[in-house]
Image 1 (cartoon, helix red, strand yellow):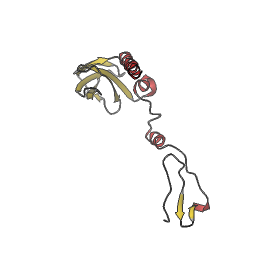
Image 2 (cartoon, one colour):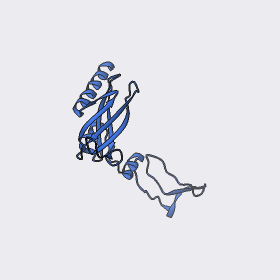
Image 3 (tube, one colour):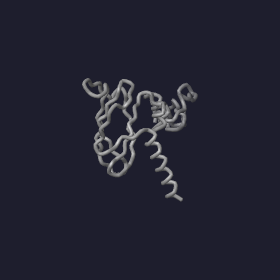
Image 4 (cartoon, one colour):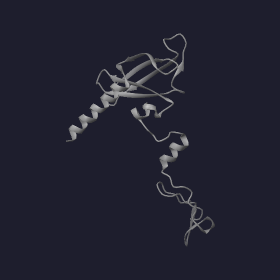
Length: 158
């Protein structure tokens, strides 16, 4: 099939075409364009960095994120919610803070929605938080809860 490009995910991308007598490349030689995993390329193009998640990203590796941590009152599961400073927060006047967000949060255990209404100051610190169906946690409480979950899972597998 003349003119068919040859490329496979996870292998070097070659600017080649095939002919009946075998594979020939443009200019009779293979030109390696770049070897890179698909997701690394997507992250680089979108500016997502290394893909750090959860508490590691909240510790300073995520300049555009603000994290709110809560626990479901029904099942006790803890949840970390990332808010984008540029898109999720709204400037509001007349409230307890200058920035405002209203979010629906769902945990991974009982799947009940929690309604969160959180006000922040200009330094992105929480001024007030009203979470219907849940309670607000600090980052330290959330991390301790995650470590306890990991320890419980490790004991269950033994």
